[in-house]
Amino acid sequence: MGRKADTTAVTTLLLMVPSFLGSLLVVWLLSELMPTGIGTVFILAWLASGALVFYRPAERLYAKSVLKWREPTGAELAALRPLWDRVTHSAGIPAGTYDLWIEDSEDLNAFAAAGHMVGVTRWALANLPKEKLTAVLAHELGHHLGGHAWAGLLGLWYALPGRGAVVIAKTVLRIVGVVAQVLPLLGCLVGLVFVAFVAAVALSFPPILVALVTPYLLAWAGRASELRADRMAAQLGYGPALHAVFSEWQAAGADSDHAKGKLVHRLMASHPPVHQRIRELERFAATGA
Image 1 (cartoon, rainbow, N blue to C red):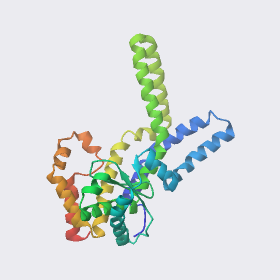
Image 2 (image 1 turned 30 degrees about the vertical axis):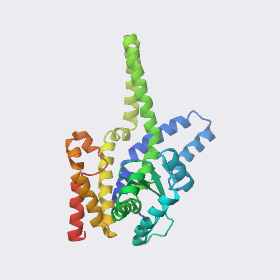
Image 3 (image 1 turned 90 degrees about the horizontal axis):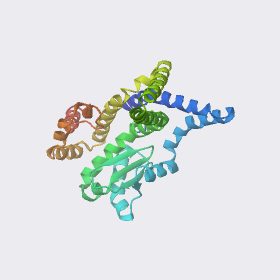
Image 4 (image 1 turned 180 degrees about the vertical axis):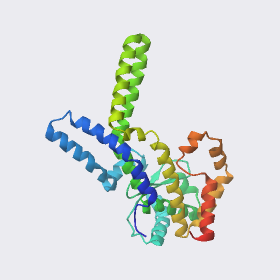
């Protein structure tokens, strides 16, 4: 099995296009403040910067500084490497394609990130039975093989300038609110100018409006990618063990927490309800499709 971009990865990238265009607008506006040559280089450098998602030194920096992961100790690597090698061998993936990392957390979790990283919590490594941990690792490999990890991070990276602009806009609105309490007339004037500016940008650049619903669509695509990674693990032969993991989560009340959540929280959930993941694994076991 080779790495590719499946439909959920492609969907994620397409859904991030409005955010990318918004960020491009921000970068272009910033470039207009620079000398012509420097401004052009600035735009081109930003456009090319997405390649860092696949650059291993940049991945290591991201893992340590942003994700707060660390490299496994010798004992941790000795316990984790054979399980990971078993998973990659079953998928026909060369050894060393991905790097293993540890998150110092007491949660039961594992992660696929960037182009070559797989993280496991310290608790999962120490307490999860080997067969179940191997199944969880197979699920994370499914994220990599489907392109989910790099597509998500690439989309996030190119959305950062736009998100920064949104943060600044919210800060301005808060300041306007404070000013309006002290100087109502001045506050109203500044507020009207700001609203007029935002409206002008939105009307001249309609894709920005699509960004209002993008988070919900991205969450939906994320849930679909989880089901696809489950299916990949099942295709590699780890369906029963993964089913056992989900059954334990369900018995522990995972679905109860999901059901009690507000609608907006369910729409923004990054993972499907556990009973749905169990049902999809059972369907795959029965039909193979």
